[in-house]
Image (cartoon, rainbow, N blue to C red; front, side, top):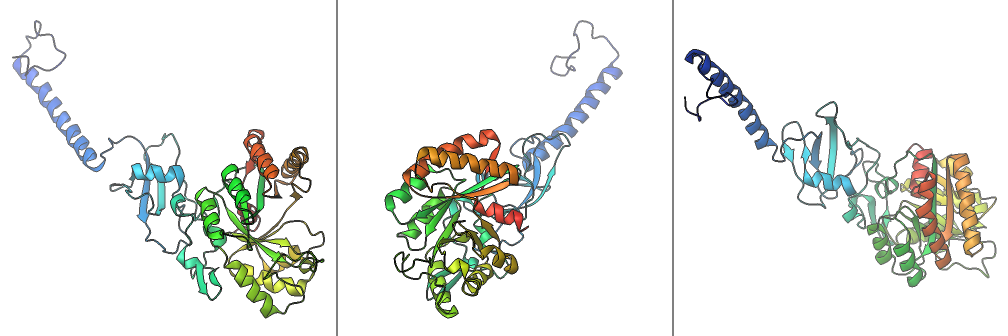
Length: 398
């Protein structure tokens, strides 16, 4: 027998066994190799990445603008990158060549029982846009009006509160949300806040600000969640007039509704509204109630900045089943580094005691700097910084 036909691993000099025994082993070996080879070839054809262990995921793409009510977790960030590499279903491997194409995950099971690494979990409540598209409003969440594009619930029931929410893990024992407001009033201040603050910090844009479309789109592209600050009548309205379209305690319902819609149409892609001033309106339930009714009907949340001690907004929100959160602390009532640092420490204490807390600040340079520095350190102390929508969606079970 020559070396090419002799089974591997046998010594040539001592190979003197009968022919019938020598032939049976290579035949068995060749048959086994053929079976293994055929299986490997079949696997390679359906798995060009080589068949390493991974999760089994069913992937369906959604046409742009299609309703996402009840859709599983939309792919963003690292998940989207993983799906671009490969998403394996039971039948075949799919790849997503377009990073801007939304994708829907419908099933996840490990191929092997000891699979290690991150497994994508179904999360029907997370309906977030791909990062590259977050600055664009979803068509089904827009009502075209004479005032401009108004936020509205989709026919499926999907709310702007859900669609434009920044994802949060939901696992933090002490959760803090911070809204830095007043953006849009100063170009320099707005640019500094967007550039300096981490994406976990929620940004509040004044409905009376300038270049709101430009700045809000930039903020969304950088990962921030947005709220819209709407002017409300203060007790000293004659000397402290917030501007045109301020919601008034003595105005009739139709007048306030028109002003509210004008304000809501100033920008898109926000999860809720927050009062700006309002010490008089917030004490007038007959005027505030229709405003909050419309906020709820449009699928938004309402955030009270906590500046009005006896505001009736908590009671009205509870009655209307309106997603609501009231700020615990104004962080920069005193504009100094030491004062703001002290308020941030107090906010941490509240979050540890209550489970969560909301702080508000304005986009002053000292406020932005202190909050940015605090954000880098807070996570090492077990604080989870979340978007403000995470607080209302958690508490309202929505």
